View 1: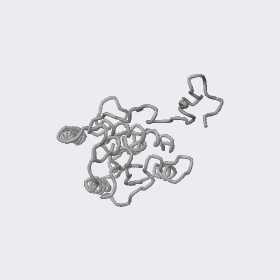
View 2: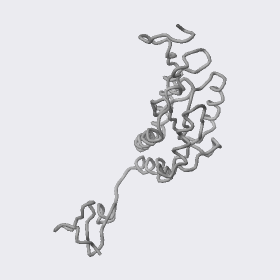
View 3: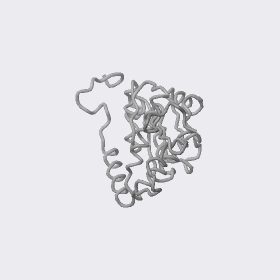
Length: 214
């Protein structure tokens, strides 16, 4: 039964409407006729964003924050259907690159990315993965986007689990708007070509050289 907290319209403080003694919360209130119109891309995007399985690629201290997100009850990543961090790339579609990527590790990372199921997405977690961070030298890749196309860049050294959660939510919004078919393939080729042709960070202008490059 509806409580006394409902106003004269039958709506309580949480925005739920009371109808025939029952609070309606969610789609049943928005769709009284039981009919919902959408697009195939919208429906596919909704299902994909709700079933993302990460492929862990922890390389440095950022991986500890990633583990905290996946294991701490207060973050509850299972509400997104992402509690299964896969060690098998063929059963994963999200790569979280957590930490610096060395030149020796780069071909391994690319191989794992190629083995992942499509469509697939990449989160570059932390300053080291995104731009090389403090390791501006010949041994570290100056941005993982030189190896794989990146969808979300997450700043920080290291970023907190709450920041990774925010990046995942932003990725979900991106997945919801993902194109299908030939449109998707064209976007992937364009983004990957741009990433492979990008200059290393230390070759860009207006950057102070440091370390061995100084």
